[in-house]
Amino acid sequence: MTEEAVRVGVVGCGNISNIYLQAGQKFDILDIVACSDIVPARAEARAANYGVPRACTTGELLADPEVELVVNLTPPAGHYRIAMDAVEAGKSVYNEKPLCVTREEGRRLLDAARERGVLVGGAPDTFLGAGGQTCRELIDQEAIGRPVAAIAFMMGHGHETWHPDPEFFYKPGGGPMFDMGPYYLTALVNLLGPVWRVTGSAQISFPERTITSEPHKGKTIEVDVPTHIAGVMDFAEGAVGTIITSFDVYAARVPLIQVFGSEGTLNVPDPNTFNGTVRLWRRESGEWEDVPLTRPYQENSRGLGVADMACALRTGRRHRAGDELTFHVLDIMCAFHDASRQGHHIELESACDRPEPLPADLEEGQVDR
Image 1: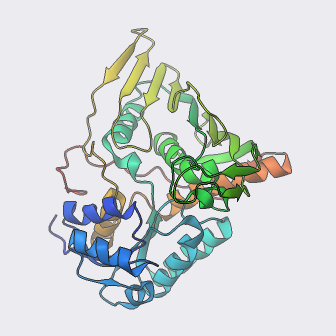
Image 2 (image 1 turned 30 degrees about the horizontal axis):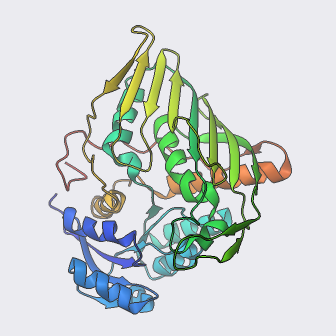
Image 3 (image 1 turned 135 degrees about the horizontal axis):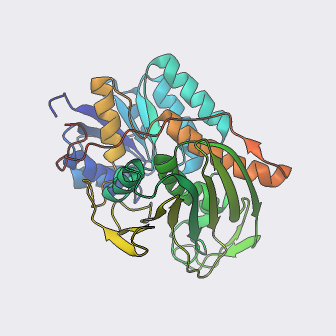
């Protein structure tokens, strides 16, 4: 990579910021010049730990003409406002998942970014890791023939037993679909392309949750969002997908993602990771085989999507975890909830292209050859 590094500001210095700040040391295209947080001491600590030159307020960061790209790691309800402020300041922005909480926010953000000539995108970028990219290669090589169906399951019992601040997971922008659905849906769109129609059912199984983790042990949470969502997707290329995301299940033995084709089945690793075991069943052999990972980035490489966006800023090409993909995933998630309330299929207004695969011969720290 010979392009000049892109100057990056990180907004939000919670736990997830550690891996993003490490990305500034891994990818030469990224130069993290500032970080901010609602708790100033937290930003100062992150800056000291990772050699970031400046810890400041978010207002100061967004007003800094040196910052070209903002990485927005605030809670979901804050994604839109911080991102819009960044765009209005003439900066590109990469949001943690989800892109926004509502379609209306997402549309306004994308329209503003296009008007300003800046880029918008966001997490997850795990589909760019070795596991997701190896599966993409197998699909493109027709290793299972023509994809006809897919299933995805994220089954657990929520965050109140272990997370230090679990309340926002049960408020708008939270719930299992908005919390974990982006990983599964982005992985599926990467493999199968866009969705044109969905339906679904959703419910709040437990209207109240009691926190058993510190420091809020004993506090009761009123649940404001569905915590068990079952959805069906019709992909534009013909496959039918089924997804369940749940915070209401204590234990389950289900695959994370499987894709079924005319000639076989592909078992996809955890979409919340960059590696994992890829397994393939072919009609000719009649048995499962483990497939070696053929692509780079097997380790936790969150920030890869930011580096890809930074490369796009310098070269003018499309970035992979981009606006159309992240908005399409948001649209799908909202449509599941709409379908449950309205009792019918929802035809999506959004679409996107499958993101381009990463080159297979990249070295650590590279995004382009």
